[in-house]
Each structure stands twice: as structure tokens, then as C-alpha cells.
Image (cartoon, rainbow, N blue to C red; front, side, top):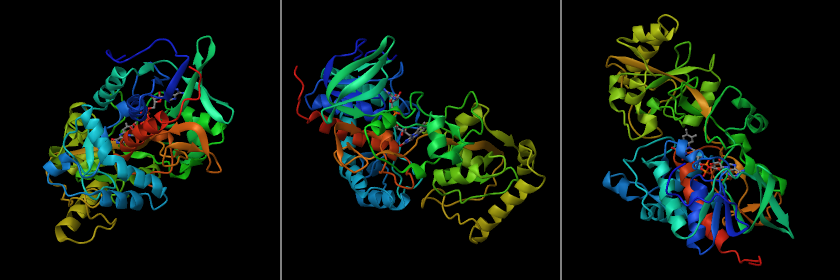
Amino acid sequence: MIPGLPYDTELPERVGVLVLGSGLAGCAALLAAAEGGQFAVMLEKTSEIGGSTVKSAGLSAFAGTAEQQAQGIADSVELLRKDLLEVGQHRNDERLVDLYCEHQLETYDWLKAHGVRYGEVHAASGQSAPRSHPTDTTAMLVHLLKAAGRLGARVVLDAPADRLAHEGGRVVGVDVRTPDGTRRVLADSVVVATGGFSQNPDLLARFAPQMEHALRAGGAGCEGDGLLMAWQLGAGVVDTPYIKATYGHFHEMHPDEDGTGILAVYKGAISVNREGRRFVDESRNYKEIGDRALAQPGVTTYQVFDSRVLAASSDEVPIYDFAGRESSGLLVRGETVEELEERLGLPSGSLVTTVSDYNAAIRAGTPDPLGREHLSGSVGTPLPLEQAPFFAHPSGSVVLATYCGLTVDTHLRVLDVFGEPIDRLYAAGEVIGGFHGAGYITGTSIGKAGIFGRLAGTRAAAEESELEW
Ligand SMILES: Cc1cc2nc3c(=O)[nH]c(=O)nc-3n(C[C@H](O)[C@H](O)[C@H](O)COP(=O)(O)OP(=O)(O)OC[C@H]3O[C@@H](n4cnc5c(N)ncnc54)[C@H](O)[C@@H]3O)c2cc1C
């Protein structure tokens, strides 16, 4: 339990805005609702705040920021919009893409005004300009919750919402599980910010059976509760066919594995399967690489790289912290490619041939047979893997987030299966669908949680009170 946050041990009877879930979407909604003048209360199912947000790599996708300018990165909201639609294969709800684009910079300013700080910006999957802004996510949530607390908002831990209470054609609150049964908390409006269902194997089996061999990570409480509660009231659900696993994670959850994995491929590594063969253009979106990895023999693959790639390590960004992995003993090392091949138990000569063919094509400037032209997306140029020693990171695919979810309109009101708003019910963050479409750009889940969480809190706070106080 983080000290200094506005905790309450008792459930309130009645509130203005009731927020379910304490990830970024919930914390942003709580603060925005409090800034909107409402008595706002957050219920968190577990005994800790943060959900998947605090387990994440902490990268937010914004375009046109001071950090980008300071690094001389040319980017624009138009380019961000284009990337979102192209990576989403135009299956995204364009209105939600526009909503993100319209409010991203003002939300970034709002977060910074509340004390959030971002480090060096990096390029990552699906970005045609570097726009992954790293931050310490726990510190970010603490800033937001303390600010909300100063405005009278409260947080109740170990308070799992069980069912939405719906009366007279509108949501009137939530039934919360308690040691003695359930207790109803009445609210003028409810914001569902309960995250995704990466920790619910039954829902994953229902919507994404192809993830059977994928690992699972994310907040312990991320089991799809909000999705099910809203579904019971007739909410629509979209984008379930686009649940993807992320590439780069340790093939088995090692005790030192924090769930973040590394993406050495984006700094020049190649990825090979158990036959020592490359199987994908490594510059592609890590979800796409994740899909391809799940189809490889034995599911396990290896990111293979040399000392030059290791030197591009950054301890600020977990997915690029190769040196940290080495010191934790999570990399396999060989003084030569041959030795590495032997240590990995790959067929004799397989990795040596793969690396030498890869290097030869780069040196000769001939097209890569798998189509690789860049390090990541359309950024960077691959270099030969030639500087000893050599390293391999056993890598699998893991479901970090579920990307699909509730249908919402541009006010973040939850829509039923016929597209009608469910009165007084809002949703934000990973629990909503429609925004990413068929593909995901790094940083847009945290981005979406902050931007839409804030908007949902503001909108929910604007609902007129119909309760007798
Ligand atoms: C290892 C990892 C790395 C990632 N890296 C990135 C990244 O760098 N950039 C990016 O954009 N995205 C990343 N993601 C995804 C991103 O972290 C999430 O999509 C995002 O943080 C979701 O925020 P949220 O507020 O919607 O949900 P969460 O942060 O998951 O919060 C939801 C909260 O709701 C609570 N809850 C659930 N059910 C109930 C209930 N019934 N009652 C009350 N509370 C409930 C949960 O316990 C949880 O605390 C990563 C995810 C993981 C796991």
C-alpha cells in the first residue's frame, strides 16, 4: 500500500462519480471528476493501486511534445492519426482515433502540470516518428491520486465491483462484494476503468483461442469484470478478433522476468526459431511478430544480436534494457555465433548460416528475403551482426493487454448493442474497444487510458445529480 494516498477504509453510501479500477484510466477519471466539482470515489478490487499500468513499460504515444522537440524529432498529430489508422488497418472507429488526436497534447500538458515527467523519447512499433514517451507509471498515478485527494476524492482498496445497479433506465451505482455479501454504493454516474482480461484464461479461450500457448501478464485484477458487468446491461463489444500477444518475452516466466520482455529486434537483432531460421521481418509490429512466433516449432524463439546492439541498451526503457537482462543472467552468450548456436542447442550450422546470409545481404545491399528494410517500423537501418560476443534472448509471446472491449461514443458513454448510450455509464482505458482496430501502436494503450480516462471523468462529472442528498 503506497502511503500518502487518499484512502478510505469504508465504502461510501452515495457519490457523484464512482470510478471502478485504479489504473491510469481510473486515476485520470477520478482526478478529472474531482476537478469537475464532484465527490469522486474510486473502488479498486485488489489491495494495491495500479493494475496493468504499473506493470507496463510505461511508454505513452504523444505527438508534438517538448521532449520530441528537444531531441529534434519531427512529428505531428496528422502523422499520428495516419499511423493509427494504417496500423489499425482502418478497422478502428475513426471517431475515437480523432478523439485521441484532438485531446492527446492537452492531456499530456495536464499530466505534466500534475507532476508527470517523461524521459528520452524512443521509436517503437508502428511509429513513423519516435513518439514513445517513457515515464515511471507508479509515480504518475501517485501524482494524480494525491491531486484528486486534495479535491476531496477517495480511494477504497479491496473493493471489487460485482454488478452495476440499473434502475429506472439508468445506472444508479454499483454492488460491491464485501466479506458479508454485497453492499450498494449509489452514484450519479459510473466510470468503468477495470482494464482488460489478460488474466482471465476463460475469456481468452472464448475470444482468442489462438492464444492457448501464449504467456499471460498484466494486473492481477484484470479479469474482464467491467466488460462482463456492462455486457449484462446489453453493452456492445468490439475488436475481439484483434487480440494479439506481444513478442519479446521470456519463453517461460523466469523468476526475474517482470513481464516486460525486451525488443532487441528494434535495435538490430534478428529473431530465429528452434531450427535456427529467421521467420519474420523483425521491423514489423511486435504483435505481428508475436503471432508468427506462436506458430513456430515449439513456440520458443530467440532474439540474436551482437555487442553493437547490446551497446544500444537503455536502462530507462525496460524493453531496451539489454544490459540489465545480461546482468540478471537472462541472456545466452557466445564468443562466436557458432558457440551461441551450440549453447542454444540449435541444429549444427543453422544459426551460423542464418547470420552469415543476413550479414552478406546487408553488406551487398540486396533485398532481405523477409522484407526487412528498417530496424523498427520505418526508422533505422539494419547493420550486420558481427561484433563479438554474441547474445540470444529466449523469447515467446505474451498477452499483455486485450485491446478489444466495450463500445463507447465520443463522450465515452457505453453504448448498447444497438448503439444507444446506457444512461450514466462511462468507460475508459483497456476495457473499451474500437480505438486500436486491427493493430496496435506502442504507447497507445497508456495514451488511451490517460486521454480517455480524463475525458470520461470530465463527462461523468457533468451529469446532473438526480439523487437526493
Ligand atoms: C508488461 C506490460 C507492458 C506494457 N507496456 C505498455 C507500454 O509501454 N505502453 C502502452 O501503451 N501500454 C502498455 N501496456 C498495456 C497498458 O499497460 C494497459 O493497457 C493500460 O495500462 C491499461 O490501463 P487501465 O487503466 O485501462 O487498466 P489497468 O491499469 O489494468 O487498471 C485496471 C484496474 O481495475 C481493477 N479492477 C478490475 N476489476 C475490478 C472490479 N470488479 N472492481 C474494482 N476494480 C477492478 C484492476 O485490479 C486494476 O487495478 C503494457 C502492459 C503490460 C502488462
